[in-house]
Image (cartoon, rainbow over all chains, first blue to last red; front, side):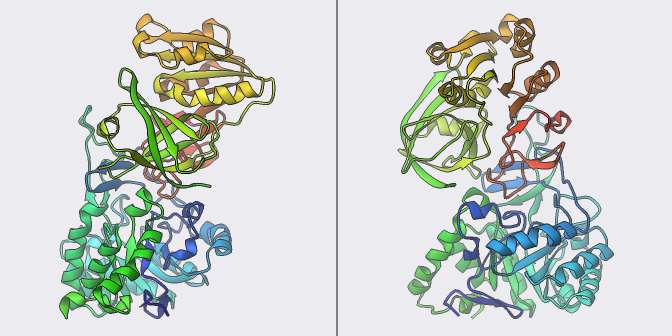
Length: 304
Length: 245
């Protein structure tokens, strides 16, 4: 494999760049701009057992460091994704996806993951226990280690695909959470989902987002996420996919140096749909500058 | 082809209170249809600004935008030579058949994309009537331009107690097929008083502008639809105004 290739639980990606869930749809929209096979893999829009229409508008706000969203897991449901979307996707995209699964009960996560687990196009399951924009599910699973572990255990029983867990920064003790997830059988971690935040309208003084609060993302959260990866990496033995504010090839190097085995890119995909291509072209140049032959050797460099 | 383009700024000036005209020349000609938009990166701001295309002649893109917050304010003060855009985005208006009648209903800055539509419809020999409403006479947009085109034009002003809907009723225009763009309250009222087929161009806060983030997805009659990619132009039968309350 090439100098950019990385491996996640047996799944080899020819590069570590993974568009984050919710910033790449099901792959079709970025295909207007470039050949989506250029990505290492991508995480599909967060999918639930049943269709969801999400939150009312406005769903989007901005801040100096990026954006806030409160989409609320709008998706057509796992059955429609498997029946309609995957066959269409496999015509234009020939790699694996991360199947991002969300739910409102342990059973729902397990049912949804079991269905995705049978799909050829699914490389690994990404359990979203961290969505800040839905009530009664999503993030509430991600703040209590015991509940989170029960989701992992239930999902591991119904699929042979690697199971990664996307954690929330709202979890008060992230280290304990990550260790508990590893003990429960998680094959890897995705650190992190968005940070809970809000903006108020200048004129009315009321929340801009119809949901009131939303998930904060973008370059402004990069140092926050980097610190969590740096803290967790030495204390777990499963791969970490870094996710939070990555917007350049240098950010990728930095996040991998802190311990990430691969990197998800979110907000940057939305402000610059070609960012993945640009980063992919720049990475080999940076490796040469550093005198490093293979990108994967950078993971955890901070600790050597 | 939808893509990212660097554009040279050919002109950037205040043309009405709080309203600017921006002429952009992209590195290569972009084929636009009336009603499509661009997503413009404002230096120093995280999210792009979606702006409708007022016209596109000889490869030069004409934009008309209003100051609505810090982003458009910064754009109006931008002193660089180039700007980065994503284009062309959105579906655009369905053009009328040759010789058909078309009524253009515009409110405020919502009149901008109707200029492009008017020019294309005139090329098809269509019979055009425009009703453009503004808050006050000093805020009138495109007055000279409309006068130079073969369009029967009604200008109306909130400050004089008239608006697009009152003129529409008074002049007996409610049975002509229409294309409308403006504030939601105006569009909703247009929908209530007209009987003919029509199209509405909608706007809202967007994330990406090209369909990926679902930040502008809203409930329509046929299901959830993204204003940026499935729109911004929707058939009148499709729109559920309650979604925009």
